[in-house]
Length: 220
Image (cartoon, one colour):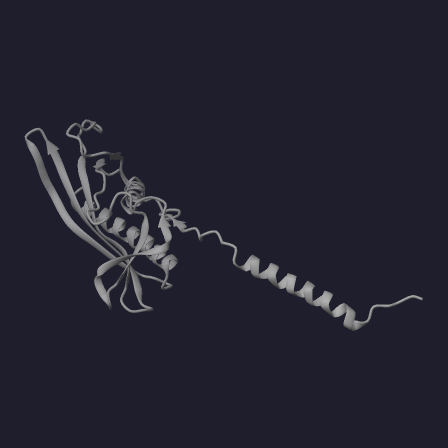
């Protein structure tokens, strides 16, 4: 005589299978997840600028940019809450520059000024090569501010401030040709690290354009 399984007989087996599936899913949910990797930013391609038909400007020697408030090894994208604690600079947890900001600004500056004149790097030494029989003036830059500043929770700007000093190095001693402070605050499209990076890039390009105009006023 043959027998057939009844629903009551199959119920324990189905219950055990369902319980095992739940335990397996629960085990998967508690497995450690890999930590989120920071997004790494740079300035991207330099803006296209139409070349003007003019004689090349005098060569300059670009000294290594100094950033007293930024450690050389610091690559975090920084922000500041001007409406709450304006004296506190905070890092975005998952946003990094590919290089320290001073180095990124130096690369951008060398490229920008190099469109209209020869730019020699390393103007800190006393001996400089001559260009067309003339020793280039030394341009020193101090990066004083480079942060994403929030005026309110939704209103923010990329804030760049730098001090520029142009020096003529002569055998008798250095001669100050000029000094200026350049400030740019570019509104950020979004109130996050990506928006701050874009605004800081645009603000950096603005200060480079202003620096170019200042050098022209000095005859360089």
